[in-house]
Image (cartoon, rainbow over all chains, first blue to last red; front, side, top):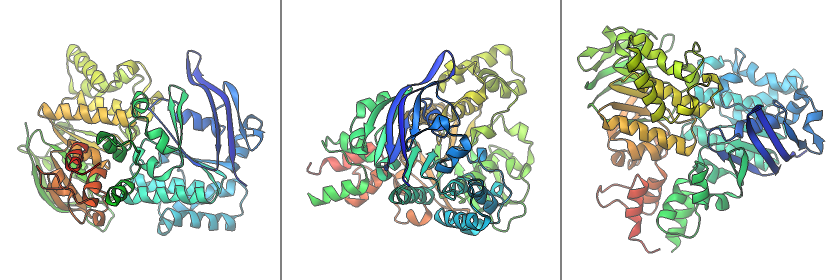
Length: 267
Length: 281
């Protein structure tokens, strides 16, 4: 089943004086969507609300027709998975395989089934040979891949990543980019908070710009990244290739270096 | 100001078989801005810890060769002596925070309290550090109530306040938004212009290319190359070493356009613009 999230006039505050989210209206379905915005714009707060980890002050979130507030966090976890920004907040088992099997078993899979899902997920992140290793003996980037595998293994319809490319090198980023595209092609709803604009330009169908608790821009990356002035106001910047093309005076918005090189060669 | 000299440095972590650093030698002059690049596991963070003396004095393990900061051989001094010369900003700010302070202001004061500075000097330095990292408005917040990016800037501020001669930053901007990240690079560049040596590990190649005087490429514990960003990023074998060159270099290479001044592929937006401007739009 595919996931669809409808967010209606969502408000949230941690304290009385400071409203973090000031009325978000969004429909999220079928696309891979990147949520971008300044530190403190409310991105992480927003996805915690989608997971039911926080309750809205007002407004609502509807998942496939059901109001999230009528579901328990445990029920939500079957459908919506989230990979934490900091893998240390998520990992707690003594071996990689136990860590990755824990989630699937909590959502009702048998041990055998969980093992199959866990191995598939580990293979997808290229960590299948590290099953028996203690996650704490791995570096930060590998722990992040383990925390991603742990969510993939639960096979949720919606997968939320909070800053998946932190500390990843070229190979790690490439792997995560492929995971995003693979999940999207499987019909999953993929949602990512991210600061790496080049990565958004290369791998996502849609970009939503958060600023000061609201949505400032929403659309495909071509459209969103063509708005240099608005992005700057939101403390963001264009992808590197887009910046170069603007500096050179092009009207078109190029998103990847390959696109631009192809275009120039074709001239 | 101290020069850094590393001679035939070899290191192996306890209970492991492979060398994390395998015969690395180089010098760094005072005030240089050095970028260290390489795939994960290539030895970047290990080298950072070797500058601070945490390797081998804290981590132990097998150690050969030496690291000299000015006249001091880091192996021969206590970590607390070296920390006044060399400051390090960890990759994950959660690992850096003391956990014993209730405000950002007090957290930044922590290092200074341990140096026994006067109250007046501490206040001056803390205010200055808050300002430089643009976190003055969070001074009374609990450090754990900050966002990832704010916390990272606090960690950098707490090191800057100690006035070290050398600052080592291990992926300091990984949690920051694009402009926050640019601000950190600019703040670090200002420190470098004041004569402080900067050594930065970073995966954002466009930033490394724009800010570094020299770039060190590591792979499997060995130093593959140590040269200008233009020379390093024009190498044909970067992908084999797990490094994607900056977008501007990839475009220059794809279109076979070199920068007239350097004779190499462009590495920054400015160089790419110059190299491409001659081409028909």
